[in-house]
Length: 219
Image 1 (tube, rainbow, N blue to C red):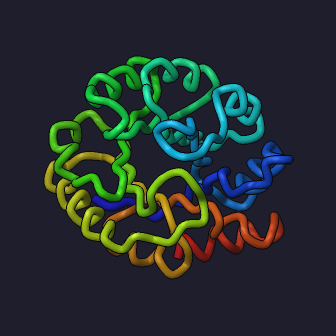
Image 2: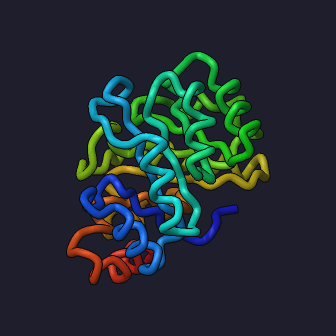
């Protein structure tokens, strides 16, 4: 069953010169999760942050730290991000040949486990993982950079995954990340998403606008 819409601002779009302040600001503004995009310059064409930054940010919010690993290999870094304060770790189905093993390792480390699919990856790739998952993340842009335009074909993927989650009667967050704004947010919610990652749309206008931005996305 689809849950109420929740917003997970991506700190990729925050002011990196004052990340702690930015995390406190989106927490105060009503963010449900704090979405942390980890990129390695190898799996995706950008380099962002590592476990030490997550650890430094952890005291600034008690909200769920939703850590999205766009890296390969994933396995060697799971423990470090858990120790840094991640509450959920999401790995990419495309990041290695042993997705089930990665999910097992995340759960063994004591946090919730998610799987992410790039835009060209069909939902059938996760057919045998549903029962192991707490979160499924559909990328609605090609990962690597913020501020990209929404890829509308991903609405069909969201619909298919929502149908599958509901048919199995599972409690899985269906998350979407990429090009989410006040125009596309209602579309992805209608397609079945209940956890919306939004970077540019959250952080535009500065801290005084964050609460307004989050409320507008929530619909």
